[in-house]
Image (cartoon, rainbow, N blue to C red; front, side):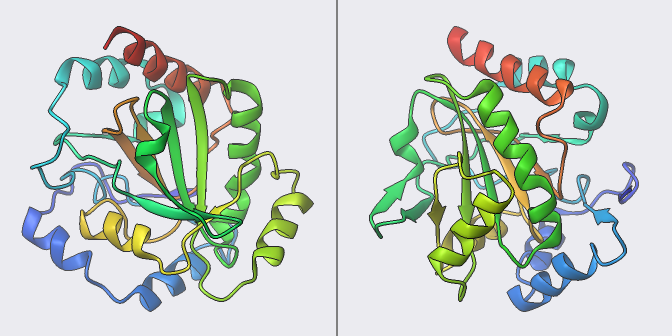
Length: 234
């Protein structure tokens, strides 16, 4: 079950900025408690209605966004599509060797970027979905990037979890500093975990979703293919 704030509820940009400064510890409790009764709570109307700040290398592309909206069916009608440009290329994280990476390195690919933690029950629920989506659609034009933001869990513990749910086809990336999450939260794109962003081949935000989602179902694949097709024409 997914509980949502009604679609007609609107919040000012200032209010969203205030909300985004809530202590991260509170957000962590949110992510755990909302799944305690086997329900997944998300806030698609609150999150991403006002997208991130401008002043980046990305420009508004209403034509591309409109086509994506038209291709969104079923569950993914709840996805919030970018109303303002946001350049995600500056997001940084590490691989299992500790080497730093930037999302800019994946330029040329349509990306589904997911931020998650092993203590977050909704994150654990959707990770197999992301793994299956990568198995189905992953290629030179599309990839799933999952960034773990556990602060204390060892690399081995996180990787063992991914292996146990047959999601170890997803490349291991993490950011124990949580800077990547704090950046996304600062921009009003996240209030808790998981948060997932659809990014075009230029590193620009297409849409985002807070909460777990059926990423491997037919509607998701249709949306991803639409994003890839739009990137080919761009």
